[in-house]
Length: 256
Image (tube, helix red, strand yellow):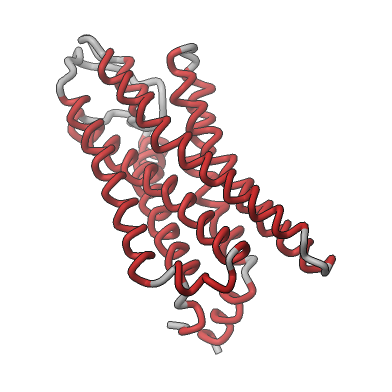
């Protein structure tokens, strides 16, 4: 509604908000229903569907955090070229790429899980149908599934994280050259908030998937999963929106 917020940063932020809503909607309602009704049964079809959307939205979250870091890199390190680089066509292309990568990855994992054989009446030691937990319960050979899981964790986890860290390294080096102390503090506090979310999301995600080959501790895996499935989406509105002066001004204008 506010024309002042029609910028690339808020374009990506609105998409991140949408994915956060979808992320929690995929997991939390079923979990709350299980707690309320004391019935933890989930059918095979429901489990595969939850797993598919969980991977899809998780990949989208990961890619959007990377794109937002790149947007910050351009606005701070190349301010004079910002409007030329981050034009609407390029922003749309970045968003389309994130969706295509996420859909392909989730679809590939879903199809690979469908080829596995499972025994009846299995118990998943988790509060959701997470990919590595499902693969561990399979009765058939899971070598290809494990290989694909580690490859996708690297491609959609490690590479984006490396891009984020590189972007913020350049951002910090640019901030250091700012003459104003107040400007430095404001920039560092903003970057610190963003990096804390990135560390929480990527750290726990990679920890869950890469440690599955080393340990079978389902309790630790479940706690780590809560951090990036529930805690991070809950923190994002505070970090990216409620602490933002532009959005606060737009909300005041809307309510008045």
